[in-house]
Length: 291
Image (cartoon, rainbow, N blue to C red):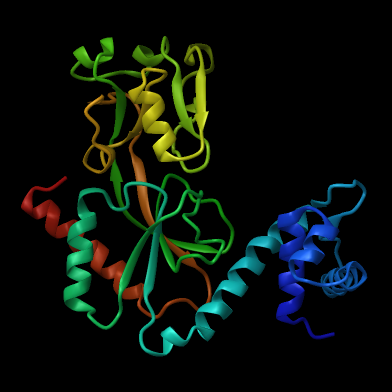
């Protein structure tokens, strides 16, 4: 049978609501009609997408994989059918934090100068891929290893790590901080989009405790309040200044790669121009002495 957009919307409603009754009310559809639509989709794939063995429905492994693809497909259709797209199609550039560091403003200025007919929208989205796998953006500036399937990446640069601490922390008296110096302090971990895990330390020398947060704002507040210290990159001091925070270089941890990522297949036609301009801006800033 032919799979239609209604099949994708039905599946996503079930995936997000975790309940057929709520999903049916949201669409709106009758529960039997919604169940038939889901079965048609599963028959098409020849695989179960939803585990119905419990009262609260759970996605199968195949369902989790298809969920991101369905979101991206619907977002692409909505973008294509947006009447505003006939006038100009913005290039949506996502980032979970710090964008391109000190190179962000030069990149935006140069883009406006060289591509006046294609708006570049910079969007902060608290997500591992900054909304890229969900179809919320066309490209994303990401840090660390990118493991999501179906993405292409272009390496742009690397950033040194820094330790973020309250200004009254004893660590602020040090010109440089080591991983061993941090072992006696709780560490704030951004579990959604951060680049720091306990694997950064040897198993026998890991910090005493961690505080888990889900976005950059919560991470900064936990540190400013003196509840923990954090590890970030050299892009953070210029983008997230705060009178209660101090930053020191981390001496013995590897640098973090910064990449530009986009989805495989048909994408925004201006992505190659964005890749080229990002390289040009970074090279020009380095020549001028900007980190």
